[in-house]
Image 1 (spheres, one colour):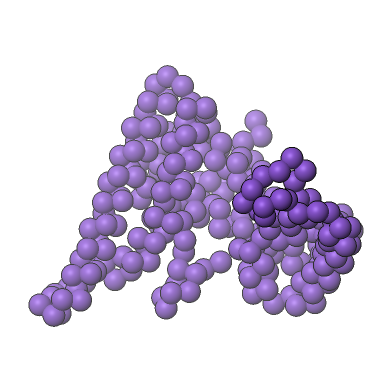
Image 2 (cartoon, rainbow, N blue to C red):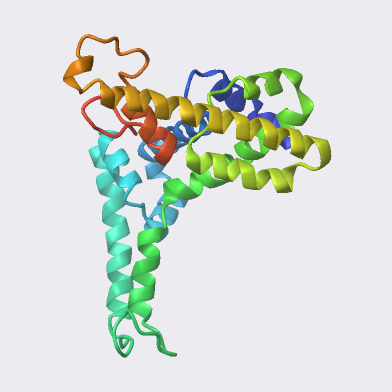
Length: 245
């Protein structure tokens, strides 16, 4: 069963002391994908053909730059720009839509459509997508097959809002009968209980700014703002407000 190949990273994510195991898995996949692109692979013809064709998104370009392989990134961007320049030269002769981009016309605007699609495409996203989907599917396989995993799931700190929604939706496709009912019950309980926990920590964090609470203990609220950002928006941030890769 192919899902077995992904049991290790899934179990490792649920073993971690974190606010969202799916975020943990996603970020590891993302780091690995960026490392692959910025490693020796950028010299491989098949990789360069793909990166020249679809490019990179605004999220992953800064991560690639941070990787410090300036030559590799420079070469990829150079051949990507060469290809895009040829496409723009070819499409720039097309006539724009009547009334601008906010009014549809039968003929369309080939240049606008092409450039808009380019802003949405990304080699790193594409490389991650299949593995990420299999990771999610593996959660449901393990939940049905292993008691130890069900215990890990039931002891987790819940999920971020984005991944809670994904798991809730997928349960209807991946599970049925008693397994679906049990999974959703535990999923909902874990999410709501831990969302409230972070919310309450955040409330005390804000209360600590009141001079009357200056000498009161911080309890578990010092990093509440960081955890609240992850719970609501799937983002990891460092002290000082910088977003983690």
